[in-house]
Image (tube, rainbow, N blue to C red):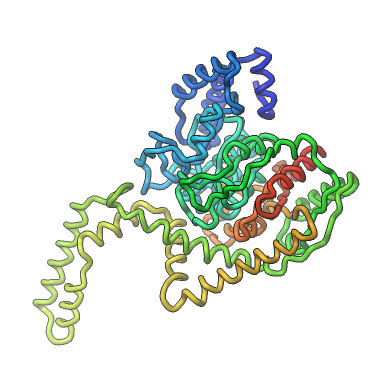
Length: 510
């Protein structure tokens, strides 16, 4: 039993051909059969899911069920669910249980969705492959020797492997759209502020967005309608009315203006992906769309700008993990014993030294870190993985005295220029098209030793986060290597309807 979209599930439930507990049981069976290979689901509450399925089935039968009744959703492991572990795939939070639900989780539950499992990810959402994780790497369901993308790789893989109807991920620089491309599913990054971030563990607060990964464009529209809207717990959330996004999917307008930037189709892009996207654009043009060449002159600074600003915010956000209030704490007895031994060794050297050497050693003794400072350091050293440490150090560097103006302040100015490029472009076009990723999914463990090469996987997606606009990945074809690839549409702030329109047109091409 397999469903290609939520509408099929609804029809089956309405006809009585199947019950919701049977649907949930089918997903559980899929997870039990394939998750050892894919490693997308890191925790699964089957008892709670089946119990909730029975309750919602009763509401379906009496006609009182919410609009998401029948949808089974996996949740990326940095979105809080009350009484569930929220680890961010990090040792520093491996035993942490959330004491509240994220706003998006509350809204899904209110519409009778079933939240069934926690999904793997790159630690604190820092990565493009879902290999930086305490749970071990997630594998691409299409080819298990390949990565699923990241950081929402578990969310994309879970949908592609039919472990759930849909999933929630987070997107800071492409972390929904890139894995969606690699796994052949739809992935939406909403406008910044369209969806509440309350209950999302922060990576970079001016970039982070929660969004859906689904089998179809319509399913993404249904989910966005549910989770979008103002939240008093998030003062960056927008009070704008949430439109009926489904209408853009049910009757898409073919006569749209599509901006085609030269910057996104040049060097570094796989030729087969370029040709495949251009073929799709030609088909859209034949159906009534107008292709408009545009120029985004500051895109060449996008990667550098993003990795300065995002790491600076990460450095600040992750300072709260000190081993004292919650999360992993190093063994204080070991810390104190090490300090005691070091102090004794220095005192012995001071006794044997003379003159300047004795003065230097005495100063060193006086400047030894306290046991509390050492506890902070040891807790963070043990708790964070190498990629997170790398970004914390980079972010701390660009914020430090003497470098702030040269890097961070300058990057903020460039961010504004990138935003302006998009503002001007959207005066002439409805959406802007690009590849989602420069290649198809790469081999597991092939880029772990080359961070810069890994970062370049985000070259087409980070600009939407820098500008605060919305973007969507829609499957565009299958490469000759057998792997899926996607194409990305971007629209101006709060114009998700135009994204759904354009993505549905591509979906209809088949």
